[in-house]
Length: 93
Image (cartoon, rainbow, N blue to C red):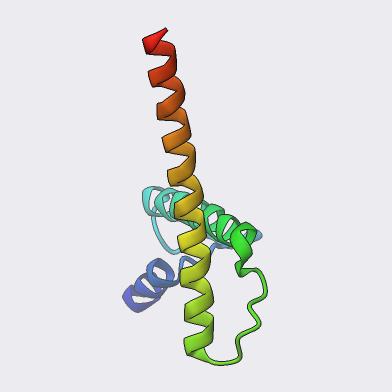
């Protein structure tokens, strides 16, 4: 039973249907929250160009992942700079 609980926590497998969860409600709620956060991050990375990488090797897939993450961070950085310029312009006026 203990190894099943560790497996459930490690994999984040969600119990479906009428089956009883093997862990308590607090652990189940935590895993649901964590899984929701991961799904959101995966969706963001896919929008940044990592939906179907053309790379055939592990190195190529890693390179595509870094490129998608870099693109995401650069866009967010540019938004922050533009927002701070707006705030400075309003404060100066």
